[in-house]
Image (tube, rainbow, N blue to C red):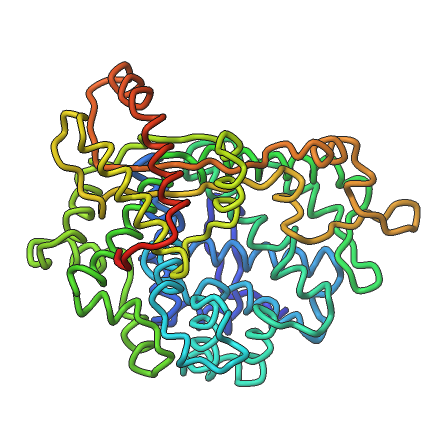
Amino acid sequence: MPDATIQIRDPIHTFISLDAEQAKIVDSPLFQRLRHIKQLALASLIYPGALHTRFEHSLGVFHVACEMLRRLGLENSTDARAVRFAALLHDLGHGPFSHVSEQSLNMFADRGSLPAEQKNEKIHELITAKLIREDPVIIRVIGEDTAETVVRLLNDWDGDPVMQAIISGPLDADKLDYLLRDSYFCGVAYGRFDSAQLLRSFRCVDKQLVLERSGMTAFEQYALAKHYITQNVYRHKGRLITDEMITRAIALGIRVDKIPAMEKLYGFNNSAAFYKNYIQWQDARFLTEFSGKKARKGKCKQILDRLMARRLFKRVFSVDLDRFPVEIKAELSRYTETPENLGMRIRIERGVADVLSSDSGMGKVDPDLVIFKCVRSKPICDLALNDGVVLVNDKARLTPIEECSRFLRAVSKNGAGGGVDVEVYAPVDWKDHAKRDAFCDGFSARIMDAIKAGVRERTGHDGI
């Protein structure tokens, strides 16, 4: 790696070093845009310190990737330069409020505009690849060949597996940064783990990223950290509600309010005009344009105004999926928030709105403002492994870590931490916890019946 020319202070990694090439990428308009996209959307309404952005996270991922390359003795390898840039640029395609935009992009994309091999891809990943391939600053600094290698590392890598593991895998640089960073800025201890010891235990064996046995305890700590921060931050009811309110505001803005700028922002059609417009958007512009004084009045603005005043929807129903009858459980276990399931979701939300409107003392509840959600939690072991494999260099034999760790065997055996909660959020209010509990207890059985009816019904009108 060339000599560093810039040192950036960072609360997680102390100093992040950039060489001249990397500094040019960081200074580019496309990368600077990430300063204005918060890492955790509106989680600051729950955790006031959660104001960090995709900008500093991307720098952190770059730093961890550099450290991994150094620990593995690969800092001068053929693909090391591309790995560093892949780490730096991996979040380039995020829209306003980061992951919150992903569902809307996937929902409203014109997939007919894509080649056959890309029709099932995540839209924000396609956007990232397109921007890396075509941004003039990126191409001028790193060249077309390296840009193409970066895209392959982020998507369909067929090269050295250890390089892929640094960018995307159970122990990639992204996860090793965001757990520590999100924990720090949210002011919680849930996401902390011994990252130094984990990094010290990394080895490259047979072109695979493996752990020495000395890193097993650090990995167990990492697994618990990932579980606890998921349950207490990423799956916090307030965080879920703010995300869902933004997502519903976008859907209503497009389908009901017919806001041209919102249709243009989320109506991906793979055109040059779409990309040119897309990169002009970030969190502040979204809120100003769709919730500001000059914003079009309608249901979208109504929800966003509630967010700005921190008048959040409330969770009026939350029940473990296992409490539903077998046939309903089977249907909901497959439920995803896609266009194919739109009709069933609408029927459920209309039924719940009728229940809440009947005698809640709150008047007519708009079904468009009732949000049905299946909240899934992976078991601890599955969450830590992220559908991958972590190998331990066990007496010169590579062994899956769950076979070496009694703790991971135990949590894997009983599926600890996994499950699905069926939840409903609505624009209701209560003054204290006692009224909240009485409200939820009083309506729980009837809301469950409305959900059952919505699932069982085989016909329904299309809509929001």
